[in-house]
Length: 490
Ligand code: ACM
Ligand code: ZN
Image (cartoon, rainbow, N blue to C red; front, side, top):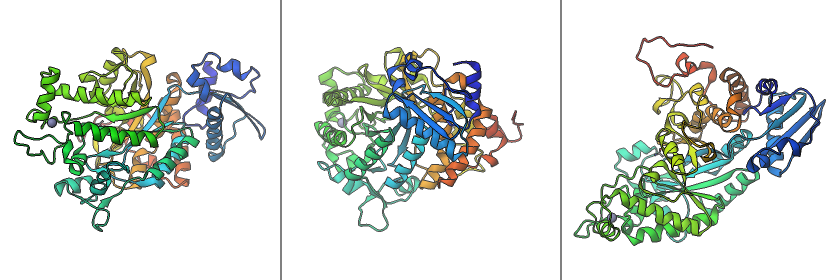
């Protein structure tokens, strides 16, 4: 790739910017052009030649042809048909978006619409957070009470539910909020996504963030010495065999629905409050010679990992899984900043980078006073665009990919979710696809602004880039004290 083709690639309207664009027709063979690429890059690589109104697509696979077609679709929607040759392939293998369907449930129509958007942006992984304390969202035949008892709750928003002391209800209660996906719906989503070369990765959260599971099946909860069940606990009991019967039964059914090579098992933020006093946990600690309750989390993760592996899949877990020992082929998803990713790479794991500093799109994208209530520091378009996923010290071969996460405690509607995603997901897509040397914010901002109109015309509710504050435009991460001047250079 020459400097000129790189510069020109960012001149045409595509998001993510392609690897190369030349106004000339290229005559080298396509096979030769991709010969040096990794096999997973070759699969997605394409060359698009536009001469007059004639378009020629070259690719080695249907996936490559699909990526070319989405480029063409985007260019046509932008009203552009640049003459010459686009040669393109991805930088990273895993280009993802996570949607939390537990805290607020948005349904199949919403998910399919986001899959369409992801396809247009050349993203290829939809990670579904299907259960959490606020609601179980996938039909499981062998444990029907998960949906019967916890897919509906009293409290439309997460915080209303919290204020009402975490009460669940049932589908026949007209005042209840909630829902869940049937297996047929999820199979339909998996197929719809696969037609767009997007893999859906399910997440079944454990052992923390699992209050709803204990509400439906109290045998997975810790007890006290006198057998009193620790009702309302956020964690599963790692010392109870009932926990493994339930998790393995659930995962068997989940793996029947989702053919993805990876199954996400959560692993984050277990509070471990009930574990020290639970006789089942204590017995397990004694048997295994553990000196800290934290080691119980490692026991559970390793046991589930070998179950998943025996079914021919690999696990992904949030970066906490590193702290208590996990086999090397588990993929670590770094969320507490980038250090989890760095440590995971140092111990030989593949890594998905989704640090909350840059990739949490439930965080504010502009001034607090101007935006719907959100969390965190500022993750403006410019700030998230500046993210480089290969953290210092990380081996490039360990960097599987990058992902945006949308947690939905404060995002109750589909319209609000889209508002938080677009255009920030454009930035994530460019970070994931385009060579880092070709990224340049000002040009990206112009392309993103034009693509945003396409999204609006297609019915997406987006953030308004035209009213973005100086602070957001500056790319600063922190909200400065009132009255402090904002440096701005565009
Ligand atoms: C997380 O944000 N707790 C993974
Ligand atoms: Zn226990």
